[in-house]
Length: 364
Image (cartoon, rainbow, N blue to C red; front, side, top):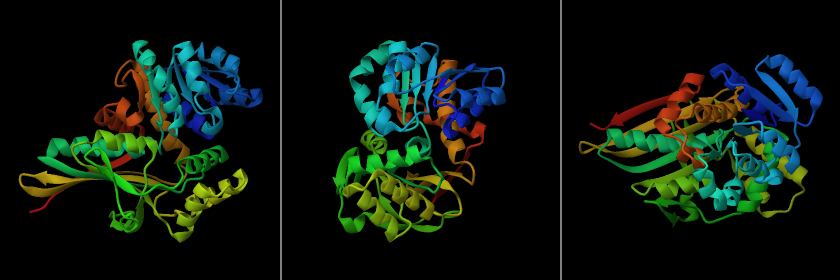
């Protein structure tokens, strides 16, 4: 199993989790030979290293030819685009990445039939956000369907105040500029429905440890895909609005041609102002009825200080481990929520230490 960009913070988290959870041999790739050697000496005999330039097709082909599963922790996506994924396809190895930002899947779609016919699993956006931000509401929907007579709506709320890398911030700026500002809305039985600006944000009581906070409707390519698939209920995706400065920063990044360095500083400020009792959270609410009474299923995942990269890496590592084990991941090109059985995958995440809770309430 190979990890591209393996000595970065996310790559180290993936490697540590894989070494802890399975008996795989790891091949770590990166440009800096000294850092590679240091990582190999720290992680032990099941780890080997190879110099890798993720911007060089020849280097990628050589690396991927030695892998059965490739976990791509290199970045930024804005520069790599689908180059690493295409190399994995040429080498006929499985592929997992943390954030395709719509770009990777779009570019790979013409090859989807080939990927599936080869029996390969390409799992895109299989990290924390995106990744768990779509998996948890899909999980909530399935759990609610098994316990309620009908499900009327699913809503997901998320926030992150982690200290992410400059490459992650660069990708965030790139995505905001690419997406621009669109009219807010939600998915009504699988169909996009616009709402007035006055309906785009609300104060929501999420209970402890988050409490009452303001959230705004916000969709990414991954959550759009989920919304189109939930054709039996409404689906809303919300991001935490820490204050007017964050909203203004996001709008400015989407509309104004700031130098990249300025954009990174602005976006990092957004994350740092998102301070809450936890470092990050995803909370999903499914509302419906059971035996003629209103019912609500609530489930949440949170992480604390120092777990930013760990939670991102553990999701990718779990997907890669399940692929290597030969079960639980669909062949073909998929976002995480669509590649796995959410119930089984969530059970595997809990085994790694991911903190997920769940309650069901039925009105009397």
